[in-house]
Length: 284
Image (cartoon, rainbow, N blue to C red; front, side):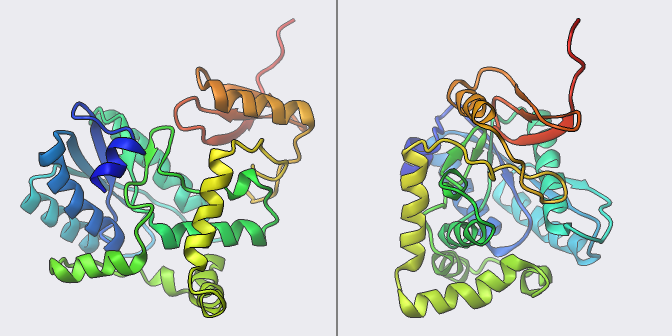
């Protein structure tokens, strides 16, 4: 992981990292490794947890995460949100979490945000995108770095993470939503991916290699890469796709792509995260 931080994530001795820490196994393992590497490589590390307000157990889980941060000498902070249950819950929770992490990074002056995605997460995401009909650009998922977001353990398997947790006797929480078949990702993780591994034991590596190849090939964005708050794909014409591709290449200022129905697609230059908003009135 030390090499990945330097070469793929662009972390230097002057870097300030914010770790997205949920208290789950993936992020607790990453906390343990990054706390060691921060002393070895010289970068600064802090951690932030987000309580979405959906489960009472989340408070105790973040308390445990905070205790581990104290033991490792890593500053910790948390956000408490109030999401309501209902449709599109996972997407709404993800968007709210990312916004909270961006705010926390600004507060602690961190220029990079580390998430605990691993190779199995990447494989699941590729399969989810395929099921939703994504084009080549949409399959270039979860690279080691995209804007200010870094994924230091993107090559590690879930089994590697569990082995690290057991070896160092690290306590962690299990989110019951990860077992809820209501969510499509849960079914991909528990049903589809195990079936594919029976047919091809290296399927996770193959799917990750596909994502890497598409990301390195700089495939132009497809019409279905972006979706609105209801998960409906945005249909972009050729001129709009070219503008998005140019914004990704230059990354110097917020790109604004005018859409139908008085809306526009905005891409932030650092995160390259899409946001749908009301279009600004034209001058004149």
